[in-house]
Amino acid sequence: MQVKEKILQEVKPINCRHFIDGNYVDSINMKTFENINPATEEVMGRVAEGGKEEVDLAVAAAKKALKGPWKDFTTQERSAVLRRIGDLILERVEVLAALEAMDTGKPYQMALEVDIPRAAYNFHFFADYLTSMGTEAYQQDQTALHYSIRRPVGVVGMINPWNLPMLLLTWKLAPCLAAGNTAVMKPAEWTPMTATVLAEICKDAGVPDGVINLVHGFGPDSAGAAITEHPDVDAVTFTGETKTGTAIMKAAASTLKKLSYELGGKNPNIIFADSDLDEVIDTTLKSSFMNQGEVCLCGSRIYVQRPVYEAFLQKFVARTKDLLVGDPFVEGTKVGAVISKEHYDRVNGYIALAKEEGGTVLTGGDRPEGHEKGFYINPTIITGLTRDSRCVREEIFGPVVTVLPFDTEEEVIEQANDTHYGLGTTIWTNDLRRAHRVAHQIEAGIIWVNTWYLRDLRTPFGGMKQSGIGREGGMHSFEFYSELSNITIKL
Ligand code: NAD
Image (cartoon, rainbow, N blue to C red):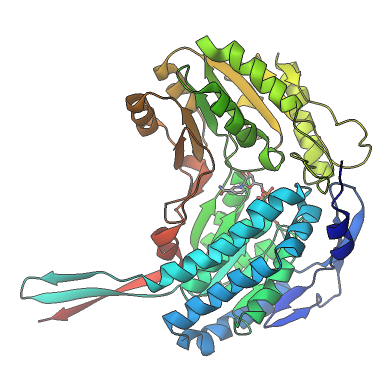
């Protein structure tokens, strides 16, 4: 096993301060909290703990910046700034990937190959998209001409989760800046480091002071709540748990903020007997355990058609046992540590519950050998549960999947839809008609056929039911991050 010594020598964890009006600052009362490395359980740094006062300062700076030089940037100038941010992220890809791995416990290699390049691409994509946009115009016979203009929404609050910190923050920030808004960002309390570096990158790329602001801290009764309640925050984009979404909606109601929600999921992975089993298993390993299963899109409810159920399980269990679990900085690690002690206990609680519910743990449910410290859980496959069991119905958000057999197409569609979530679904089949037929009946915002996690940033991304409100991506992002005014000229 080769440890990535060089990167650990070069990159040290950082202490995190807020970034307000173009400067790094401490909290007014100097309060901080610990930043814990989930792979070692060690305290690796301290994070400024913001609250209402810091959010007030950040929102005031963002509001002022709407009137400053930012509003006069031409489309080309804004596009150039976005492109530079993407370039600077790529220049610092190793540092950012190392900090992301330390904060989250995810494999360094994944951060290096997926999270950080995608963060850069979010900026590059919207830098291009921005320059190709038009607006609507309608001629009403000889009576009138109608056309619309697009303006920024204003100050946008961004509340982020810990699982894909840099990828998801930039998925919001890039279109937000492209549309000419200003931002107040709050990263998850568990993962503050890459957002802190991103603030400096934005400044270096030429983003004027006050346009982006960053406040660290917790959610309820803290920085998160202060953003959602602030009268001068015009819109809030939130990615996180469904129940947090409910709390934010209540808080945002009194000032009627525009909201965009990307929430939880319990996504079905439906495997028909006519699919290519080896291809299914290659991808199902990723859709089950990538990022320790801490991806909102993970296919944690696996349904396999009866004729291939046993063959699937045999191969899937064997391949899962081969996954290297452990230190994120060891070459070849595929599954790292889950985010926190609290989450580790929660995921293990679900595994215990599965046994009480009559399930059989085919592999996993324990810790990898030789790891006394760190929040590690071996990838876990559970069978023998009924569709009503809590482990089949609730989002576990860890390296745990349940596998259930099914017989008919109708039956699996009914089971797949029997949930209040509606984020993603994967369908495996080589029958073209069936692929379309099933996809049209699945209640989810994102449906993949014979693949998973394949994204094109022009397409609508988001969930239905309690998995989200609105869509982001391409034009859909601009719908959220801008206001349209229609102008009618009587001819
Ligand atoms: P979480 O809801 O606990 O926290 C997310 C953020 O909200 C954090 O920054 C937190 O501090 C803040 N927050 C918490 N309570 C708040 C409140 N009352 N007011 C304002 N802010 C508050 O979610 P998490 O545990 O960080 O992330 C995991 C969840 O996110 C999972 O449910 C996962 O499915 C979901 N998720 C969804 C997507 C998607 O695209 N749909 C992507 C990633 C994660």
